[in-house]
Image 1 (cartoon, rainbow, N blue to C red):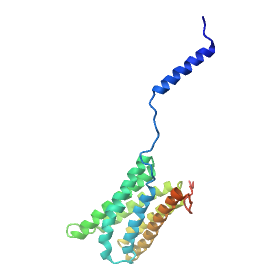
Image 2 (image 1 turned 60 degrees about the vertical axis):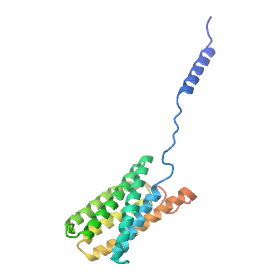
Image 3 (image 1 turned 180 degrees about the horizontal axis):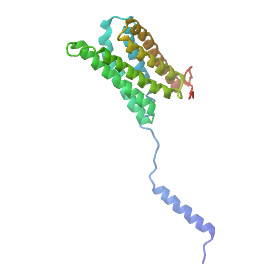
Image 4 (image 1 turned 90 degrees about the vertical axis):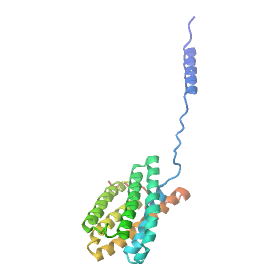
Length: 218
C-alpha cells in the first residue's frame, strides 16, 4: 500500500510543527528600552557651559568648586553611564563618544582638584596641558568625521568642540586665546543642549527640529 504525495507532505508539515513547538522562542527585546542619547548630551552640554562661564569671565573663579561637583557626577559619571547604555543598545559611536568624554570630565575633576588643593606637588605643566588639549582635539576630530553621516546637530557639536580644544591648547600661552575658547566652548555646550532636546522632542512628541534629519556628507 503506497502513500499519496498529499499524505507525505502532511506528515512532513506535522513533523515540522512538532519541532517548532519544542524550540524555545527567542524574544528580541532590548534590555535598554529608552534612548540614553539626550541624557548624555545634556550631561556634556550643561557641564561644558558651566566651565565656560568661568573661561568667558562671565563668572568669578570662585564658581569653580561648583563646576568640580558637576564635572564629577553629571558630566563625568552620568555621561559615562550613558555611554555604557549606548554600547549595550549597539550604538558604537554614541557609546564610544559618551564614555570617552565622561571619563574626560572625571579625569579633569581629579586633575584640577589636585592642582588647586596641593599646587606645590601638582604644579601646572603648560607644555603637557597644551599637548593634552591638542590630543583631545585630535580625538574629537576623529569623532567629527563620523558625524558627517549622522545629522547636523552632531556635526555642530563635534566641530565646535574641535575648535574649543584647539583654542584651549593655545590658551595656556595666551589670555586672549583662552577667552575665545570660552565662547566657542559655550556655543558647543549650548548646541549639545539644543541637540538633546531636539532628539527628545522627536522621540516623545514626533516634532522634527532643524539639524535632526540624517545627512550623508561623505
